[in-house]
Image 1 (cartoon, rainbow, N blue to C red):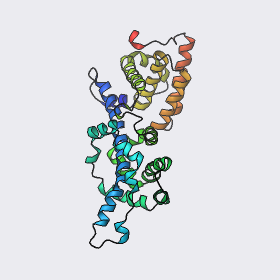
Image 2: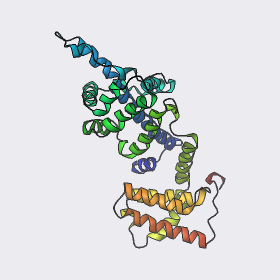
Image 3: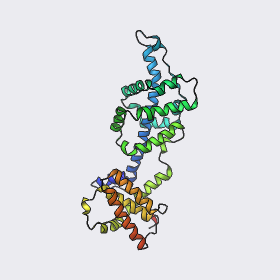
Length: 297
């Protein structure tokens, strides 16, 4: 959807292969967001050691300054992340360490140090696996996500935050529970990537015939005034009707209603639903719902 919208906003047609490259850039932005969020979590956790060093180096350190508990810096899950080859490669590629966030990390750590969850973690003897995992999860879900300053920082750096937040947060929580379980170089599975590329290419290649189905249903609408995103969603829906045999039409319709409600105008859900439902019924009545791969047509 985002890629098609980008292409629609351009004055010139896309060159061969360019659409897929734009789609890949969207995938890359998702990876960069995930990498940066995890980097911030690790930096907050590692700041325990930095805090200890800074306090011990005071001109007149107190007894408390000299005995800062740095248990968090040795957290089992933290070091599994830091030693994950895929994570190391993502950091090398995306370079999250180049962002000027030192003061933000310091403030987040200070806030963490004042929480009951962190105090309890420090007082627990040993390194119980569950406790080690839970404090890392708390840094993200209980500290970073509710922090308005941190969210503003993320929104400033990543224009895709609003669109990708739910997906990335889900992937991130799964990774914190089992560091090393995902590949940062392939956070979008092969099947999902192939589907996205196929749907994108289908909509582009079959746009003329898809529009032949849409335009007659717009008798009471000015096609020029219909929201661009609504038109794109309808094109995607019809492409699924005709060329993606594993997706039931009702699933397609419901999916694009939700997307229209989420990303377009207040009336878009009802509008997209009406058009797609009518086209689906006509295709069934005319016995034209014989899905095939567009490349074979």
